[in-house]
Image (tube, rainbow, N blue to C red):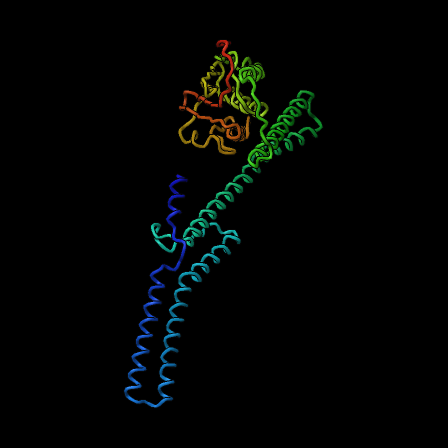
Length: 368
């Protein structure tokens, strides 16, 4: 697409005044010179007064000069002043926060010149600014909403703790709820800061070759209590060694988020599978669950900030985890794809560039 655009711009006219315009000027001046010569011959033949013979050419050339000046002024106004005034007015509106402005091109695309291109670039810039403004507004709105809930919980249970007739059991329950809300608020702020740093590239990935199979096993073990609590059957197919070149600490965010979501959305007694394969070019890790699944619309928005389709689990997260996953994989030259169907679970497939390593076999474990 970019190549086509660049080729199109190679055909953009560099001048707003075509050669034909200068040909018109030349033709008019030659014609006027011929008329002038004819006037001189005519006046000499008629033996007019010398003063008259001097005044008439002066008046004639004065009229020619005025006509050419007005014609040139009209051309300059149409070619430069009016388009630049429209562009200046549009720029003023954008500066005042109006991102709905649009400056139409002066010609059809096959006849574009550099001023047309500048206007189209201006329109694209305004469109991008409008998108950023919308994202910023949505982001602030979502952050405010996400923070409001845990803060309200903390406030309510704090008021209950101040009551005079509460038992020790109630006090422990209220304190546990306050701690949970505070943890959720802390995680939200932490994820916002991480995502902000990643998107603004203030976190520079420190890529190095390491064994992703080892890392996957370590991350899986961290969720052992969660598997047991929900009696989830765990299926693992992982090679002994598979090297990738990436930032190990950032990729840990990816596996923890995918595994956490798999546990969260899988009903008790369900199954979660982690399968890893590799070839000469890529290492692929698939995390599957037998949970509620997602609609096609949800799959299209699953990596958007704060997006949560399943409101029954909204209290367990803040909709930033998969946005973090997507950004980390982009910085790691990786990719993630989602396949899901309502009622049949979801599969997240992560692809990372492989680093050559000796293959020692494949480890397969089935744990209930």
